[in-house]
Image 1 (cartoon, rainbow, N blue to C red):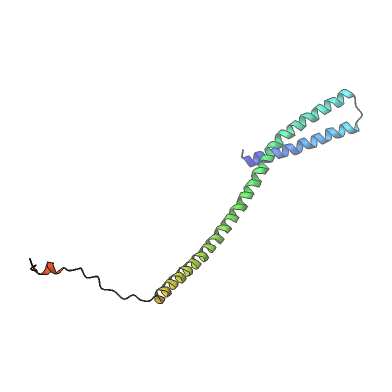
Image 2 (image 1 turned 90 degrees about the horizontal axis):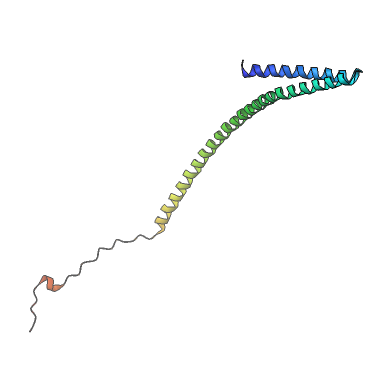
Length: 140
């Protein structure tokens, strides 16, 4: 038997037990009977109430499960929607970032143009000692 069929069957059983309980309560309140008969009816009502509580545990759990499934579907839809908007914002951010990079690059180019150009200086000449080139006679 499927869980849904089991749920429906327990729900029917709960309805039937509630009707039976109401009939017994009606009999207690309307019929004039002996004390022992009323006590027996009250015991029967307590038994029926215990059965109802037992069946209702399953019914409540199934209802809760269905509500949780519905919430999960709803939140999944919201997550998909938010992911779409995040992707759109990400694209806009990429465009802004690219334009910012272009602006920064243009500013750097302008700064280079404003700087005076340095003339290339020739590399320093190595010092040459005349003694290295020619033999110099020294006076004694």
